[in-house]
Length: 364
Image 1 (cartoon, rainbow, N blue to C red):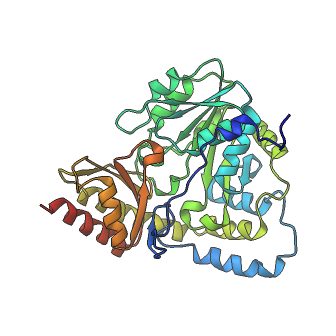
Image 2 (tube, helix red, strand yellow):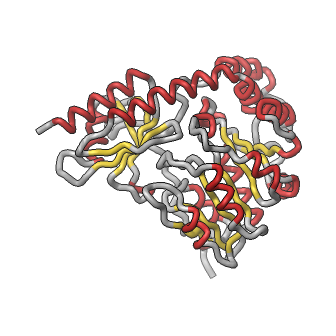
């Protein structure tokens, strides 16, 4: 008998998620390019809605988030009855795992997929199997080969964090066709607002014709990261299971009001996408040398890979950028120790990133 309560063994095996750094070791305030936040802040209409809600702090929020689901449905052409909301898409991922994964079950993800997938799997008592990637891109054949009789969920970030790569609509369809109907395919489209690839589909059509697919989304990347609002679109039977698990007031009223305004502010979202595309493409074009390589991206960040030459490693680049007042994301936890993930920021910040790394490359 233990002399204290002990958490379940599967919980204690979880490697806690560590967000990107936001301060230097000395406490110096830095421009944060480590968390993939909106480079233009929040929609002014969302800020206005947030302020107007302040007088209602004593009230419980709408447990059904009806106004928010209606707004999402209106903008994206979806049936609000097939939309679920959560405290960030992280909560949605957790509850989907709780609903469909148990002890002895498995989930599948790509090798360099989002680190939350193993966490939610272990929290539900399952095991997360990682399928090898090809050139930092999810491999459909490898994902299907990782499926066993124990598989309950396949998690796929599309486009993917932290690599910025994506699977085309044809590849997604082939992946789905290779899955058993009792396996839930979770298409995590957290960065969908930034994609401009013509052969990409967010997953709505697939959800509409399948009973084992959900598409998850978030407001965090388009300006509301602090409010924690996520949503998903899926079959009614999955919504039913999800709503039985979630807290009755899991998304607070201020978050709902701001998100409702944000999703309707399509002009701001378009401005954000245009700024991101300009800065992202500039980084991919300019950050190429014999000492580092920047990969194409469909997200609001780029992944830059460095070599092992002393003075020109990822750690050297990280420290140099910190000296310049910029903090980016180290990739050790993702198994990519030679890489840095650089979030898209202001034009001034992006020019400073380019100038700093080019100077490092040219040194000596």
